[in-house]
Amino acid sequence: GESVGLHLPTLSVQEGDNSIINCAYSNSASDYFIWYKQESGKGPQFIIDIRSNMDKRQGQRVTVLLNKTVKHLSLQIAATQPGDSAVYFCAESRKETSGSRLTFGEGTQLTVNP
Amino acid sequence: DTGVSQDPRHKITKRGQNVTFRCDPISEHNRLYWYRQTLGQGPEFLTYFQNEAQLEKSRLLSDRFSAERPKGSFSTLEIQRTEQGDSAMYLCASSSTGENTEAFFGQGTRLTVV
Image (cartoon, each protein chain N blue to C red):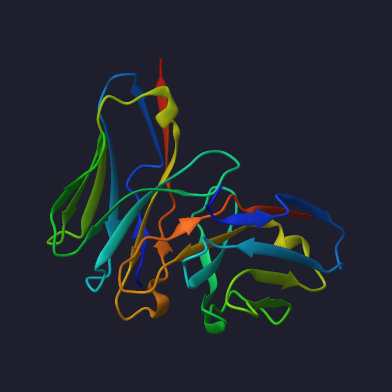
């Protein structure tokens, strides 16, 4: 079946290091991907998105890479800070999915050690 | 605050009671989504509106669940005869019309059925 999932459930890094969070998707029709950050007790917060006609997109301290050949998505966070500690979800949508609703993966818990 | 607003933030109810949640989307967004999230999982799509029209409902949305968006602005989600399995975070999100536009989430309503 179709699914969006993450390779690792937890990731622990030192403050100042770079973090890489991975996501795999199985549906080749997926054409839009978003990374969300969710802190405890709060709703998901939009970080960055990428469309399927792109391989890379950069934001402030974050970069998303898309490899359509192997259906893989990653989120890179530069100079990780304690405030980056949260659960990170990748989500996908497809043009034929009405309203562009999102399908989420299970999430990766990022812990940043001072 | 011009983000997505949800009320209440927390609700504790006895099994069998009815509950109603409210969502106020970002004002210029005509799409509104409801998701449900259980502990350790990503959000799962429940239903979505474009303006006042409810265009899709997930199979997760049993007959006990009903959502409305009467004037195309705020939305309500009602759960009748609550069950313990309904305990979850109920998230609302909104987006503008068009393909591949990011959805912004509210802080959610945490429902506990005892």
